[in-house]
Image 1 (cartoon, rainbow, N blue to C red):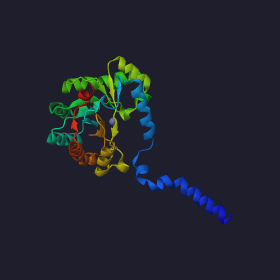
Image 2: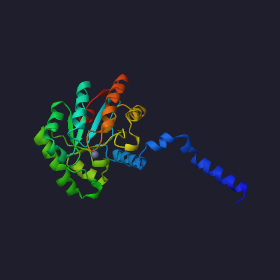
Image 3: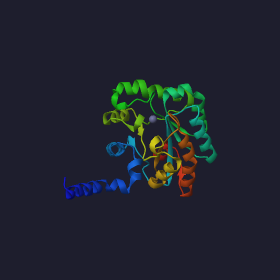
Image 4: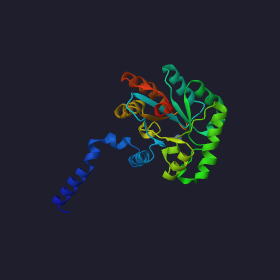
Length: 251
Ligand code: ZN
């Protein structure tokens, strides 16, 4: 291979790699498949504006913090302690089988003024189940146990992974369910890139009026969520935002 040819290859590769060289943060901070996922849910929100929600309808400086995958014995109580300290209401999308395991923590969530929504019984990918399996095995048992233990019967569903087929959205809409995804993913679940300061920066870079923010209060190690949460609350309050529950934000 001639020297000119080698030079040409080097220069070509250099320019192809240039965006990655210049912005290593952007390249390492977004989980694989995220942009495709985001495009899809935006389409669904446009297609089903009365059933499928990513954020509030207006421009009030109100924010709904949401916590998925609880309750558990460690992180959910710790999140509740932080919310109590700051007197911030939030929405917890709970997994039915965890509710049956931790009924006292479920009761505590409600007694401290938070909203409880439905995050399925066992956290499957709804796109791999039939509608009757989704409804009979995942949504209704969770609805019933939340009603029994906590006395709340909101028809608020967050599908596991935020993933749900259009047809399922339509059928759930006919049953008066509202599907609540989010407009701001903290990526607190993304172990490669979830240091507390990183989570805070992501929130501050992407915050907007009537945002629904995704975080987690169970389902794994949530130490960084606990460290980031007070930083997020204080930073958003300093910017003039206040907090509300999903149902109050949307309806
Ligand atoms: Zn989840």
